[in-house]
Image 1 (cartoon, rainbow, N blue to C red):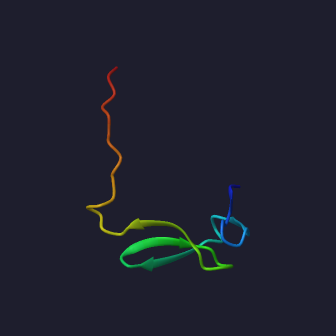
Image 2: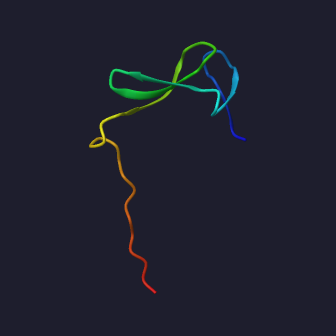
Length: 58
């Protein structure tokens, strides 16, 4: 299991313990202990980068 240490309160967290919130149109992961935003990304599908499919040759 991957654990993340919050840089604000130094609490060790698993990905299941992080809270999700929408802040200013961005999906964010928030520390449940100190409410620090740890990760944010735009909700708009046009702004998110989609993986590029590369054709495989036999």
